[in-house]
Image (cartoon, rainbow, N blue to C red; front, side):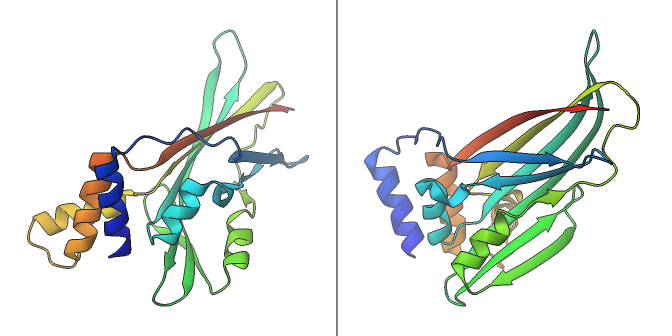
Length: 198
């Protein structure tokens, strides 16, 4: 109920968009032998936007896209990997969840924390992508993009199910989803480019 009241207050106040935060960033390390990247998102919850969304029990979704490119006259995209990390807080349980989904939406890993400090530290741990590194000599680079949002596809699907008379979603969740869509849910895109030489 608290998050619904917050959304109503934002809507009535005019719902000005917040300027993108400067602190959220991608960090990448490249394995010296396989050239596979390990990627991590840093300082997400140093941003009041995302900290507030988590505190109000919204899911914070991070949709990753990692592309391997070869430099040439016209650069060529050789491989693309995508995955999604969803961070959420369950206030009634006093727990935090980190769920990783692969490109097909299948859960690859879910971890539960009772400590916010451990949850935040775990969220910033590197994720290694296997068998994407370049295998031939040349001038390569990784192009990385993370789209962060307070609503993920699952929540929009819940809204659609509710409108279709599926009562598994609470009216509060549906109203909150509609308000966030109207007001403009917090969102941010973070990018990075990392050269790789073979």
